[in-house]
Image (cartoon, rainbow, N blue to C red):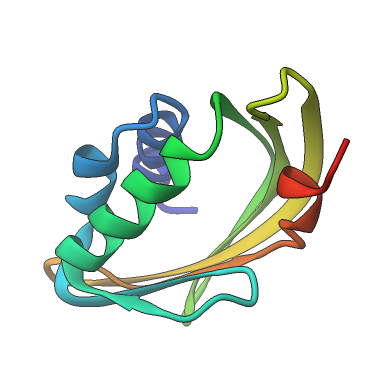
Amino acid sequence: MANLGWMKEMLDTVDRMDAEGFSRFFAAGGTMRYGNGPSVSGPAGVREFSANFFAAINGISHRVLGLWETDGGVFCQGECTYQRKDGRAVTLPFLTLSKQGNAGLSEYLVYMDAAPIFAPA
């Protein structure tokens, strides 16, 4: 298996809620889709989406349960704990698909039902 240390580094950047740092993982034409939301394009789109998302929560942490590399990309399975603005924490399962290009991520898909993050208490 190839060195997937970049995945841990990327998730650590997200856990610090560093929108600028997270956007640097993406190629100029790279896309990201979170849950059933629309795709965003390029580092600027990823940065704007991430900054807005991070502003809506108090914290985030990932726990990786498995990583699989295929010819088509890297799959990451895990649990993500969100600290909500009301002080409650919610832990949700996720699966991502990351496709690397020469200059960074060309596609990053996050499969998760994010509704509980913002559901009324």
